[in-house]
Image (tube, rainbow, N blue to C red; front, side, top):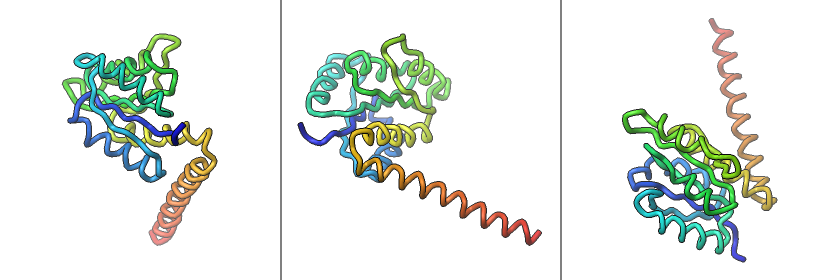
Length: 169
């Protein structure tokens, strides 16, 4: 079997600016990925065949970004036992709340790990995928831990600078 990789499926190419946040995280961890556009409603056969093919080739995790009715993550989760992460796309008349509900409200036995609506969720989808894939990749696990440590150090450095500024008041 080839090296594991992540799959990102977008319901529309207009989701790419949001998904770029996910891709930056995956690239930062040197995780291989594929990106496709497919619709749970308009191209259900494409979704089904692509998920089966990607799983057979070693896909470790599926990340699905969709807005409005946002059934893409659920459609993917119905076709694989690999972890599925849903990114509710912000936009539309309800600013992504409809996408959040459509993504998170899955029936028992068909889970979708749902992240926040929008940019923070897109970033967290990348981090969650990395953490899932790190379960079987010690090198990736070390990179994820180092990233978390660096983020904590950045916060502490900002706090130290704030404390110095407060002393001057």
